[in-house]
Image 1 (tube, rainbow, N blue to C red):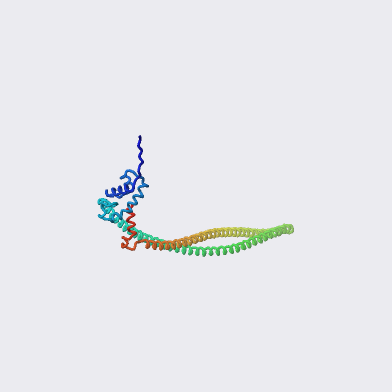
Image 2: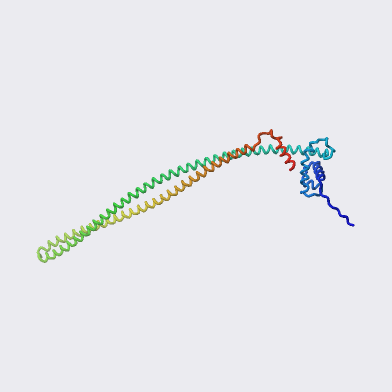
Length: 325
């Protein structure tokens, strides 16, 4: 007949005995070390039993050597190893607490230095933005004055152009009058020629002298007509050139006015952007000061009052947690 055995689970006394054996070897009992010593047992089963062993360790250590050999007491070697491990755990916890306090102090000092540097940087940035805003305001004011001067020049030039137009109209009227006079002179010459022809027919004896006189008059009239024509042509050229130069100058001034208007609009946008940057920097500085105050208050509340609290129940609880880990 085949015999069947029902496997028995890991018991509490087995886990405690394994933890005592691991502690006697100078090692901290952990779930894996206890399982390795037992050769069986799942972590979920061993973990609560090992926690109970740790919970009873302080009470068992408090019994001293008088409890050696009694039920539930630790063997002497295990007790000595546990006390040594307990002392090392307390010393490690105290050293770690002191290091934590020093690290917090160093971090606080670095934070204060960084906050001071950032505050100086923000103050410098605010000063730079203020200076930039003032410079842009002065530049915009100068551009406004310059634009006003150019507008006055354009107005004066337009008035001058109106005067030139009046002069040109006057020259044109004079030209028309001279043309009419020339036509009248031509008519008079034609009449004189006809009179000369008739006079020549009537007075053949006086023809030569009269003809010379008339030819001289005609020559003088032609010279005068030529002079007046050249004078009118020169005046027309000068007037046309002056009118063209005036139009070119007016166009150039209009281009300058347009450029200055665009530059003024750009400066206005830059001033608006600088003012927005200044408001943003001031808001950030106010939020930064508020966050700095809250952080300093929180750090002061978190820092320990002194080394006198090293043996308080909170320290002992922290030491027990270190031993458990």
